[in-house]
Amino acid sequence: MEDSSPRRGGSVFAGLVGASQVLGLVSVVLTGVWMGHYRGGFAWDGSAQEFNLHPLCMVLGLIFLHGDAILVYRVFRNEAKKHVKLLHGIIHLLALIISIVGIVAVFDFHRAAKIPDMYSLHSWCGMATVILFCLQWVLGLMFFLFPVASSWLRATYLPIHVFSGLTLLVMAIGTSLLGITEKLLFSITSTYSQFAPEGILANILGILLVSYGVALVYLITKDEYRRPPNPEEEALSVHFKNLTEGGEPTSP
Image (cartoon, rainbow, N blue to C red):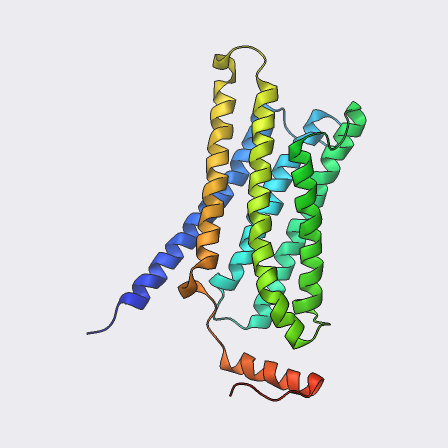
């Protein structure tokens, strides 16, 4: 009888990936609805509407696209590794650009409204996340996409790179939850009945962001979803090591 467990495992994996994408996309859409419907829309003129670009860009860039850039190593685990590396780097670059737009928007709004910068825990955590994200992307570029380090150094840094990527995703989600909480606290001006619809939407958004993060962490850390060894890529790696370091092959 044919073993159906690999097929069943593949179906579960596809379902989890699909669920993660739904959670991420709905989070982005709800952020847009929150800022567009309840906060007056978007602009680039130093007004509160420019500030509204900040949460949308951060959720889209630092959370959704960042998570998807990590996930490509699971979704395309049977594709050529060099192509997956390139896709991983491109999505992260797009996430970085969008996040920088979000950072510029909030600083521009603060300057126009004469509001002090970096006065909240959210802003401190957010700036730390963006700076570390930039550093992570540059190091990934130097170590893996256009490697300038030795194979030993790359192998040593790889688990740090993976851990840092997941940590930054968790930091981005946590920072967004802080931002949602601060936004809701500052929004309570009269009665709860006037605040309820916006508050419910924001709370749902927070739950979706946490769920997206949990789904991503599960998919990335589960061993059976890891990229399987590719003999051809391993052979090329060993050959590269011999040419550059004069080392001896340690595996066939």
